[in-house]
Every structure is written in structure tokens, then in C-alpha cells.
Image (cartoon, rainbow, N blue to C red; front, side, top):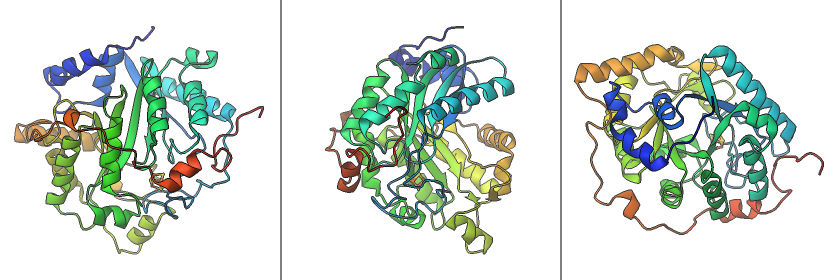
Length: 369
Ligand code: SF4
């Protein structure tokens, strides 16, 4: 089956109530993709060999306390051939696991996937986007690109804008929280102002903007998490990924959890907090995830997040019990996101300098060069 891309303006209109008509409690990603592409679409993760300015010293070292970035060495290289192999084998794995999958999103997931000279970004993104015969056979219908809010110079946004004219493109920003103490605790090494600037420069360029949020950051009260929810709604993201804070091996957070210094949110608290959060989202926001997890062998705490389906069901049951759904508690912002002026690029000089210098970054080794 050939998947055709639907006109995004029609998607926005039909999405507004389509998920409610389907009897869902929130605007699920799977259903949104089905409406958009007319069939089941799954993500395939790709590690394209990027590093992160929060690891290599451009803005900080050490990385976020929850991130296992031991492999993000500034000297690492991933050959383009390896990228294509990852995509092909990922597609194969998904085909074996699920029936009726008709399209794939190439998901550039680990590290900061906009942290490289823009011509090299274009090469690797286009490779995944069916510019090559092997990929056409793989029915890759779009891209998802994970990044940091301080790592999107205009040149990168313009590239994504041009790709989005022909393909589905989603840019995923790690926001995690709007509160600076939480950002500092995680060693994010960016401010909430970077995030506001990034979304205001990204919006309405034809690609989707998704935001990652963590619930259960130590020191954050329920009221603070709800402030973050209202801020996500105010900023006008197209999609949200909700994660419970979880700790994995080989991270500072993992060490703190093992030593008893940090404890994770309880499952019941997470369920009610996630529902409170989603009630504050606009009904049009696509909910890409409602929890986070890691492979069992690698996860320290909380173990309850491993039972993903049961957790999702608990969230749906909480909506049912309350008689609410996503958007029930949404407050329309005083100034709609579309009316806010586009700000100047505030990408830090340290990142911009390195992005534009070929060879400085641990960018892709292009075969034959
Ligand atoms: S910004 Fe992202 S890639 Fe970089 S250290 Fe933090 S979580 Fe890891």
C-alpha cells in the first residue's frame, strides 16, 4: 500500500475532535498517525553518531544526570552505511513484531541530532527520507529529530522547514520542566528561555514540534508540574511526550537512586499527575507518550514503568473515573502562540561556532570522503 501524506491543515481540523469521536481519553499518537497517513506507522530509532554540547564541553560536560551518554564520545563516528543498516534492520524488526505496519518514521533519537554542520545534517536526513532506492523500499514516510532547545540555529530550522515541504517532520525538544532549579538539578545546561525562544522560532514552519516532559523531578511540587503543563499549552507545541523520571545504570541519577539519596515517584501518584497534566493540554495536542522506561536489565527504578500497557490503562481508567479527558482543564492563553512575534536566534555562540566548522564536531563520516 502506498501511503500518501494528508494535507496538514485538514489533519489539524479533523484531529480536533476525531480522537474524541473515537472514544479516546487523549489524542494518541498512533491514531493521529493513522489519520494522517491512512495506515499504521511505527518509529525506527537511529543512532547517527552525534554527540551533545552538554557532553563535549560546548556548553557543559557530563550531560544530564539521567542520560547515559558514555557513548557520546567526541571522537565517535557512524558511517552512513551503518545508518542505512540500522534503518533497514529496524524496519525488519518492526515488521516481525507488528502486523499491518505500512510506514516508518526514521527517529534520530540518542544525543543531540541537530548538532552538526547543516550540510551533513541534510545528507543524513535525506538519506533516511527515501532519497535512496533502498529507503523507498522501506516506506519511510517521515523524520523525527530529537534535540536540545539551545541547539537550533536558523540554518537548521530552515533545513527542516524545507524537508517538511515534502515529508512529515517532527522536531522533538527536551524541555523536561519550566523550572530552573529542576533544570539545574538535571544539569541540562540550558534555561527555559532557550526553550521559549526555540519553539517561537520553530512554530509554523510546516514541521511538528514535540516537547519532552519529565514528571517527578525531586523538589518539584504538584503545583510546579501543573505550571509546566500550562506552559506547554501556552507555548503551542503540536505534541507532547510525558515521562516519569526513571534511573538507569551508568548515570549520576542511577548512583543517587542506588544510594537512597533520591527516590522515584510512586506509580499511583504518577498516574494522577499525568492525568492532571493531560487535562491541561489543548485538545489538539498529540500525546506521543504517557510514560518512559528503559530495558529491564538497565533500569534501576522505578520498576513499575516496565508494565507500560498496564500503566497506560491505569491512566485511561483515571480519566474514566473522573469523567474527564485531555483538554478538560485547558486554559486558553491570553496571547495565542501564533500571535507572538518570532524572536532572534539565541543559539549560544559556543554551539554556533562549532556547528559551522566542519571537522570540529563528531559528525558523520561520509563514505568516500
Ligand atoms: S541534552 Fe539530551 S543528549 Fe545531551 S546529555 Fe542531556 S539528555 Fe543526553
